[in-house]
Image 1 (cartoon, rainbow, N blue to C red):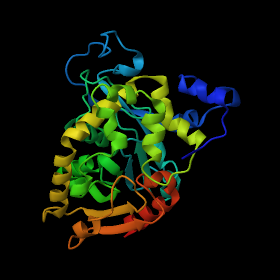
Image 2: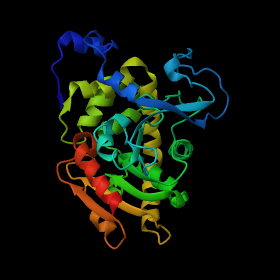
Image 3: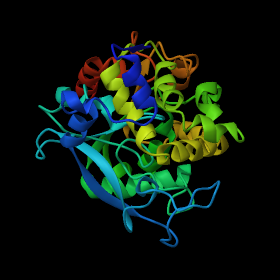
Image 4: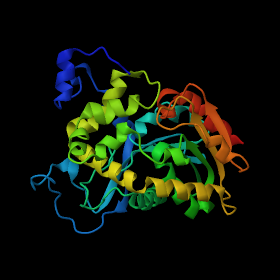
Length: 339
């Protein structure tokens, strides 16, 4: 649920694409953006022609265009660069903003970095077929490029939700770089192979394009339906903003959902195989918010039984554990990394 004190006129303005209460000073979104920086990583494929609207063939706005030959990723960093690096990776659909309460907890002992995936938050959102198609294979390759740019030495990775299989694939190919891998509510059992209806609707024929352009459906409903969330309106506007200012976020959401629907099952099977393999030597912990309404906990402990992986429960957290129990998750991460 969203806790809101905004007036009807303010809500109408925002739903119509208006700006965020700027008369009262900087918004939460502006403040968050000011904390981060853009990192260039991962080259565009193919030609560099201007992206066009898939319906009418018209040249799209700057939000749907690639910013150059290499993509821009929005990253927020906390802690000294001399400390061990921890990369915080958000799930689908979410943003680096979800780790805002985790970053301060880690900052005294670690150099922690949270970033927006391509297609989310403040990172580039290229129109599909114009340099990036949002396939899971492309995301794996793009992740490698970003890590090479922000953490060329060893690091630990925390990843939440549906992007976990992508990260495990990367980690399997770069075990020498990893100190520890922490998976937060990952899709890890056979029951997790299908997206929940709240997300699957974005890939529906025709209606998917419509739903993915609806800011409330694409951000508010997608976040709050997955767990016991009581989100402040000022936080909800940060997640909502990309869908208000440009259609690029919606087109990306539609493309990602289609890719997940096509390849998620195979990626989960691959992840299970990797984590159960004798060749997997990376320290691995699974943290699970037990109030997850998208992914059932049934079978998670059974999978980890007999393996070297620890399981840590968060009884009051939902799917996006870092969103509603950020400080708690941050302290759990610190304890895991110290061990």
